Length: 185
Image (tube, rainbow, N blue to C red):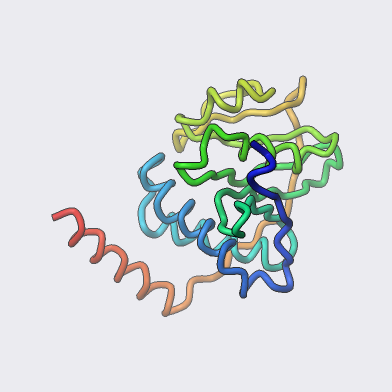
């Protein structure tokens, strides 16, 4: 099935114009994390802003899977750590209709490149990670499962960008809360 899509690296210098990458990040943090972990609007906006800042500065790398018509169908965001043997998977997402077609496996293969991987998996994806060479390290307080491909418990640090919320951000969160209330009625 890999001949039905291609994986490309998002250019950090053109990230702000990359609509496909932006849509995937927004879908992952805006919808998937609300469904999977019941994240609040504030938490989803904060994590989306952080991911955008990390990819936009090149501190994290984003790979996008696209179908043959260049429509985005999946993504992975990873951060190189201070341990050159370990990459941290920040997010892995494939749009529903394209799951179970090898997209996530192809994205992960593109990230691995001989390194060990470390991530925090949402409950519905733990079995996929296990089938793809990860083992469980433990449960995390927010409902995720810490996992790795390493035979040891990876120790590392990495840089993180935490943008300071602006008045626009604060208003956006309030507007989203109001919209979600209306949609739930």
